[in-house]
Image (tube, rainbow, N blue to C red; front, side):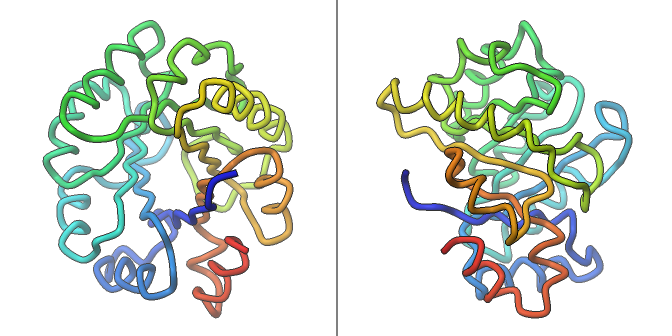
Length: 217
């Protein structure tokens, strides 16, 4: 297992002081900033877009992991890359048969790419593109809102994808997003995840640094 990275989701941050919130993540030992971009169409919520990513970029040197929960992500890939994204992940459910082309488009901008699947989507839907990816993201809640409860079937998907990654010999990150807590993080890591998205668990903690250290340990 490669080193575990903690990627707090700014969906749970205080948007009125986002620069300060992002700087605090760096100070508290986070490895990545997870940016949940939602359009109100692909998911039943609206968060933020390109301008927020551009502004966050000014406040941190941490990698920006832009998780696009939007329809037609290919229309916006180049603009998110230009805004400062280090990795852009897109959903099979949004791209379907076009997923390979969208991943290749992301790579063509000089940014890392990743494929995402929802809790009710089988691994087989992305099996053929896993080795194209720099990261694969397994949703352990249905996307749209923070603070949801972890769906245990995600663990089986992590094991299945981890086996594919290990067999490929490639350095591909395996990310989990949704309902991660200090109580379940050990079994999540044991199942093969090495990038842990945590929103509420970090931002609602009294001691963010201690929480990030505990999730990583």
